[in-house]
Length: 228
Ligand code: CTP
Ligand code: MG
Image (tube, rainbow, N blue to C red; front, side, top):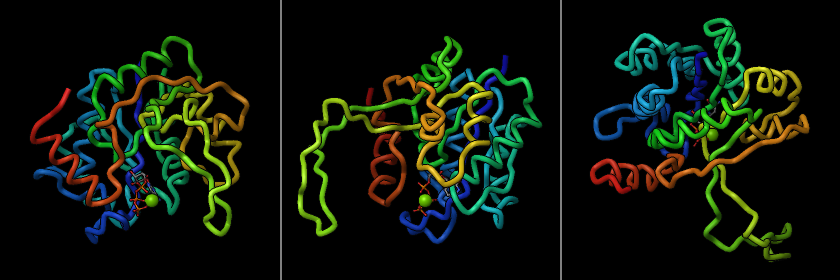
């Protein structure tokens, strides 16, 4: 049964500072979003992509992803990421009503290796309700008070930083979005609020989120000379 990826791409890219939606920013000649969607479809285990675009740039986004082929749909997103995912989820229920797995993958993580995408899909196919790719935390993490004074050093052994794609059964993701009141920074967080278990698989440094010009410089260097 089919796998559908929801691709929130409706952000404004303020921190990247290109004066255009981040999804449309060219990276070595190709828009970031096109690279993200090609990565999903090219992994061989994603059959449809539903992109949430900035409402005032839907046509530009359609043109940008056209080279990825016919399995890609573009809908207007919302003012918060959660709203954008909700828009794409509604469209996916219409376009792929019998999907077996739903992924949610930030357009900003355009360089995620195919192996990570495949592992997430396999984990859901093997029975997980929800799965996230994670990396151990390399830095020491400290908590501060309102005056920025350190209150505690957190034991990082059990901490993980979380990437996308995050994978779900369609039932669980629909239930999570039906229940949500306020915004969340990731989709698995909504599933956690339902009291469901969220599994993990290994993420990858190349799945970094392009947030700043520094991140983009790293991505361009990796594209020019891939590392294992
Ligand atoms: N996103 C979205 N809809 C929004 C806000 C964000 O679909 N209203 C998407 C972004 O396009 C991105 C992902 O969510 O793919 C992660 O968001 P972020 O990295 O914060 O991107 P931007 O919101 O574009 O960047 P900034 O916060 O710097 O403006
Ligand atoms: Mg943002």
